[in-house]
Length: 332
Image (cartoon, rainbow, N blue to C red; front, side, top):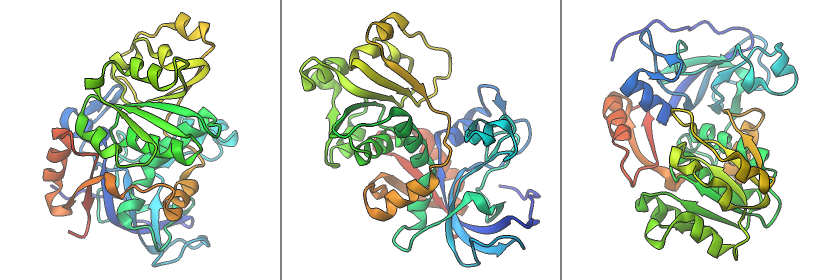
């Protein structure tokens, strides 16, 4: 650990937040281990972390929606609100967007952060800081669910039972899916998923996942497929999971380009949608937690004190089968 000079000036539309909980994301671990993700390369010391909740300790002169003492979760991407992408509602795709812990931008694994008030969302009393720090990955899944255009009673397949995969299964159910068929090669993750109502684990010991989906749907195929692993093997024969006219939503990001059978998608007229972060969903993610429609508490596997941050990253890097989300408490 080291001291780094970070921005402390609170602008008229900003708030200063004392961070309480920061989640460790897979991208954080990748930067920690390898110093790069694709074209994003760490060239100078960079603070990690982009999943955060905390308490407002100072407000800018023009801030009216928040006050000192408010508990908030924080949306980590800051766009240029005047950009063309932002003006049409796609601010997550603004080329000038800065995002916590994406080189060269510092993240939030610090005692305090300064952030635009418009990107900070109040947490209800019944939502803890640990749950608030889960809003960021949950927002990714809300974006994907929105892209999928879920209809009540749909059957969905989710490939990958990491943090995003499990949250995606819960979000799809909250949106109206009647059942989610969830595959992951790690049985411990599927055992965890099995405790949630209407999630059906697809264990590898029961045969290929595609065959299990076929049996579960009478050979028709699923209405929706959310690919959350980014594993090249997941895209092999991916069209065969879906019914004619089904929808594929690609969420996981492969490290290298992957091959996909376009003709197989065409003959089923499969709709293919993609997701990159999120836009305009944070408030709804908070609402889902507050209502109890989504319970993220079972997904928080381990909590470390800030002084033990290195141990937290080492734990996350182990990729234990029973782990989903590792978090760091900043007051510890």
